[in-house]
Length: 249
Image (cartoon, rainbow, N blue to C red; front, side):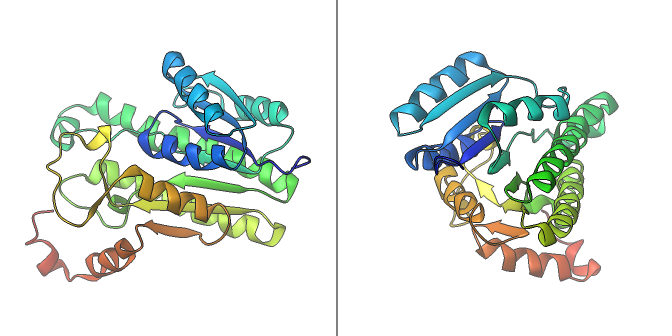
């Protein structure tokens, strides 16, 4: 950070969580590259972030699930002159019943949520290893902590991604760089619009964004968002099978 401003890449910048996090970094004067598929949406986000205090906002209309992660990330790092933070926040939830009846849809979901994400994580790891600094932040999910009938295909992708990020964190730790998997629970976003939202477990994207921004500075390699999900999932992971199988979750 030659000018003291964080250099940040956000993949999936049009997601509610990513946009809320970008606003926090913009208020700190960050230099940002925001990436998503919808150019019009990106342009609107860029205008908003500049108004909130960002030093610079570059936009890139790109389908992250199909892009060459190494080539694209190297170009972004060159644009910024280095990399302090990369946030991977794209993904799709899918419908479990529909997925079980459609193998092609399963392959597409795995490509988006896992295969392409792995490529971006490895590309980021290579950059951070070379720099011996910086942090990779990946939005995972508590769904990856234990397979459940309601979303085990999505959960499998998020579980595998969590193991990958933990391994990258272990690799980077002696070098001074970091990797963090952030695991939100129920978040009120467009992706969960069809869910019935009630009770204290649901939070707004802004609450998760604050946790992500803190994780960029310290903590990890696993961060639950909010923290109470760590204890909820600890219980769920350790429930005996005969008890777990009676739960409709």
